[in-house]
Amino acid sequence: MRTKNKYEEAKKEYKGLGINVDEALAKLQSYPVSMHCWQGDDVIGFDGSTSLSGGIQTTGNYPGKATTPEQLMEDMDKVFTLVPGTKRINLHASYAIFEDGEKVDRDAIEPKHFKKWVEFAKERELGIDFNPTLFSHEKAEGLTLASSDKDIRDFWIRHCQACIRISEYLANELDTHCLMNIWIPDGLKDIPGNRLSPRKRFMESLDEILSVSYDEDKVLVCVESKVFGIGMESYTVGSSEFTMNYALSRGILPLMDNGHYHPTEVVSDKISSMLLFHDKIALHLTRPVRWDSDHVVLFDDETKEITKEIVRNDAMDRIYLGLDFFDASINRVGAWVIGMRNAQKALLYALLQPNEKLSELQDQEDFTQLMMIQEELKTYPFNDIWNYYCETNNVPIKDEWYQDVMNYEQEVLRKRD
Ligand SMILES: C[C@H](O)[C@H](O)[C@@H](O)C(=O)CO
Ligand SMILES: [Mn+2]
Image (tube, rainbow, N blue to C red):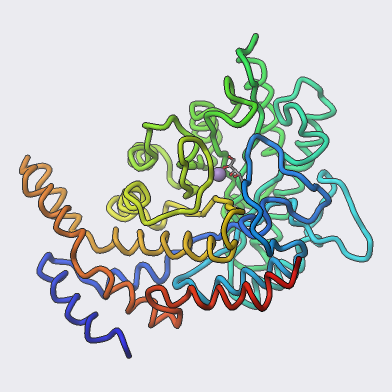
């Protein structure tokens, strides 16, 4: 093996800090990261919508976007050959696959519309996570689950109930849980005349959605908060306080997306508080640049701080991690690979921290040593461990994946346009 000698040397250095590298790698290997399908086609889906709404936006026009389920699956397969670790996939309801000219509206989708995804996942031993799609639809031009129009509310309630049935089907077929995340884009551009009523309607709609019977061990329903969206700058119905209180009071999971808070707030600082009150929580890993821009996840400080919180709080079995970005300005497969590899890298970085020692130093108020160790660790031979992990996972080391993506672009993506 090309990476073995350097790995053995690096292991000795980490051992000096009391870190068991083999144990860290074993933990990393089994921790699933859920890969969002929507990076591959700019959040468009296959159910007929042609433009993205809901106050989120993809920018860029890089060639080669997937426009069919087959193309999207082909691109995801390419990514899987280049990313180590255990993966799940995360689908939106708008990625339903209709066959033989059939087409139903979102409130009538059924498990059979996801049969091809189940086949795809089974062949690759992947779990599937799921999301109702309450945007990019004529009935989502105003509010959805919080609408003052009962017909609109009822349509989206039926949609979310259908999604619970589909999530249960996915969980049963794949013999693993399905995380079902509800995010609504409901909000107002300008100062509201009434903040309470839409939130009350949202609460009642959610209660009605959750009134269907389903296996709560298999379908993990969560609600994702947000602070603002494009065109909803002044008020979002599903605010952080709303979703936290709703999730806690109804025994479902809160989902925190690190693009969904005020710019100086960080999700890494929220995780420990949430863990004290919730058995399980979910995260969307993204990169907000000045706003919820959904840039590709990097190996940056906040990504590392988030993964450190997952690991050091001994919460790898309590925190469900998924990615959420969409960049159409660069090669979309490359974007996925970079984001997924960085999520894995950040988890590894977190697993290679002397957490007990750091905690002791904090309690002893030895802040100089605490800072010193954290800084010195930044130049430890982390890369030698990462390369070994990639090689043992049969995926390229270092930048060697890049040429593969470029060849794929020439041979597959550019032939699509
Ligand atoms: C497409 C996703 O569901 C969406 O990005 C949501 O999770 C979100 O973060 C909206 O800002
Ligand atoms: Mn999100």
